[in-house]
Image (cartoon, rainbow, N blue to C red; front, side, top):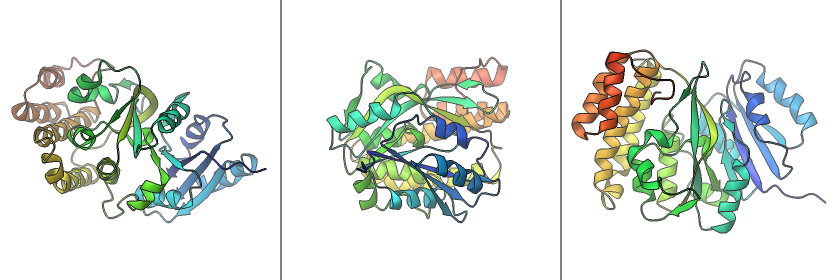
Length: 314
C-alpha cells in the first residue's frame, strides 16, 4: 500500500548542477520524503539530470518554472506538495544528518507551530568556514545561549526574526496548510521574499527553534556595488518598512537592531568580496547606531587584516 510522504522537500534549482547532487545526497535515504526539485529555466543540463535521477529514485519529482526566480519556484513546489510539512533546501546547501528527524519531532510535539528553524554552518566558495548563523546575531545568540534543546517562541518571535537575520531558508520546516493559507512567497519582491514570509508566519503562529547547526550554507561573494547587492538592500528596506509598525508594538528596540544588523550584513558582504575599507566603514556606521564590542572588533579586523578563518564574514 502507498504510504503518503510525511515531509515534502522543496529545492529550487537554476543552473545549479554543480551542487545539486550533493544537496540531494544530504537528504538521506528516508522513504517518507517526497523531493520536489524545481528547475527554474536552467541551461546546464539540470533537466536531463533530474529525469535520470527520478527514474531511479521514486521520491524525486521534477517540476519546472521558466526562470521566474526562487519565490515562484518554491511556490510551484508548495502547490505540488503532498505532505503536511514542507522543508526548504537551496540547491547549493546541505542538510546535516538528523536535521529532518529532529525538526519533524519538534513539530509532532508542538503541532501549533507555524514553522521551525535551526542554526547553520556557513562556508565561503573556497571552503573556508565562516561564523555560524547564530554566531552573527549577538542578541539572539545571547538570549538562546543557555538553551541546548529545541524551544518554542511565542509572541516575541516576529520581533526576534525582524531584529537579526536568524532564519536561513534552508533550515526552515513549515506547516503546508499555513503556507498555502498565507499565499506562500511574495513573488513581487524578487529579493528578501523569504524574510518577508517568516515574518508573516511568525505573526500567525508560534515558531520553533533548534539551536544546533543542522545545515551547511554556501555564502557567495558579491560586489557591494553590483546590481544584486543593490537589489537585496532595496528589498530588505521594503520588507523592514512593511513590518515596522507591528514589530514596534511588541519591541521598539527591534527596529534599531534591524537597522544595525542590515549595516552589518552589508559589511559582511563587503569583507567577503575583499572590500575591507568599505566593510570597516559600514561596521563603524552600525557601531554609531548601536555600540558593541563585536562591531568594534570586526571593524578593527577589517582595517588591519587580522581576521581569522572562522571570524564573522559574508
